Amino acid sequence: MKEAVIVSGARTAVGRAPRGTLRTTYPDDMVGAAIKEALRRAPELDPTEVEDVMIGCAIPEGAQGNNVARLAAARAGLPVSVPAQT
Image 1 (spheres, helix red, strand yellow):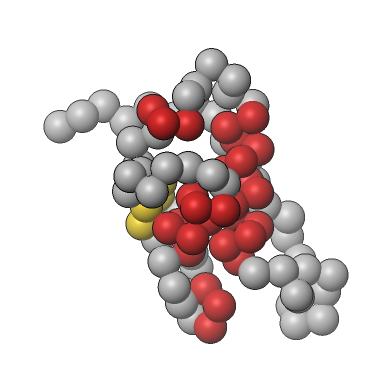
Image 2 (cartoon, rainbow, N blue to C red; image 1 turned 90 degrees about the horizontal axis):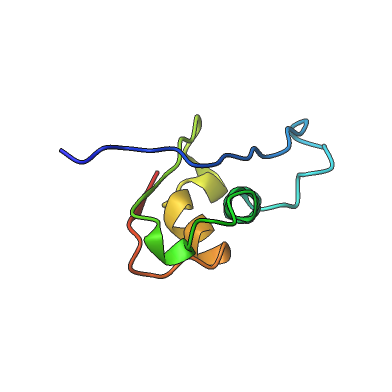
């Protein structure tokens, strides 16, 4: 078993449903921005060294019903070779 290491982190904004300011923002765009920010905070990490993206989603339905992690990783500019799961 490989060792899992967290080298950086970032969070998304919290909005108010269903009429909040984030109502027109797609989940994968929000998470993609968080991944991009986490990478920015760890300048010593080459994005091609990321081995996996794992994202939690409390209510996976509607726009969140897709593999949010895969879409967010792509939005963050990670290589398509990086596995991602929600």
